[in-house]
Image (cartoon, rainbow, N blue to C red):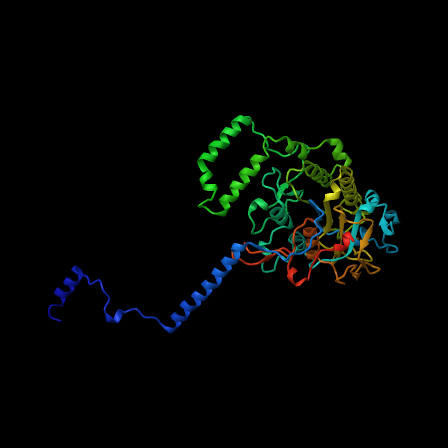
Length: 465
């Protein structure tokens, strides 16, 4: 076209800011439905956010509310129920030195757990408990969160101790509300703030480490104040988000434990007391648990782990009497738990402290395996004491060989599951187990006890009957 080059140069120097007719706004049918779907989704999410603002909804369940504290003992590895708390005598298999003895109407391995036999009047054994899974990591996780770890909210579900910390923790107290002793693998706080997670401690005769500073308390206070001047704005209402705010909670909690006589008294212990509890890691954990509760500085839930119960071979110690077998671990458990119950009772703390003990599942029944051990099995037990629990008896029973629940021993006429035991723990502490929280990152409903609204699970109230 004549003059085209001149016209192009004119357009470049003076670009037209408006779109012509053929560039008018338009949309396709597909794009229209994309926008419509986005609007509906946004409306739904906005509704979820409004629900999240409500935080919780309670079903108004009637709780036992008899406990101020709870000590949860997890026997990692799954102890054999038919050799311990649901003793079955198998001719030619059960060692005669177990000395099966009837105590308060209960068949008891008096030669294996003699000291705990003396505590039976304060203990109630639930024998109709059945696990959901036979994989250690999965079942141990399940036991601590009270639901399947592979369910929809399993990956963000908090430890039962974290729920107790949320419900019963006292920010004015200096001790952590949730204490984990010998439980480095304890499940954490899930989607809840990290401040509600377990404070993990391996008990030591010298107490908590690093609760003083080599430069002295005055210099420490000065340095801490200077640190707050520099980075407190980044930790409090932090523009960096929740992780930075969690650090701030850790700073404050840790500082509360510094230069504190109550901390030294509760977490340190003498050689004499340690020997009384059996001079073991488990015994020391029981000793510290008792001292922490006696201090009454805010701890409401204590988890104690005792490992080594995975006895696929040499369960009776015939090959290695000093190895991990029922005799060696039984002695540790017998010394530590019996002394804990005695001390709690003599101090009056047992009246408001629920002690709950179980493994993640049980072990095979009848004859031993070719390796002289017992393998994984769903049937198991749970032991309760304190907080008004009526002891000296069992709830539920198993078949003659311990392979299945013979009768549930309670109104639902079925196996007792970990979800029921979780509801029992909450009820004992006065926590409504039907509570549903809506404060997870996506505003989803998180039930304290799964399906509690449908009354599928509930407390074993027969413990107090």
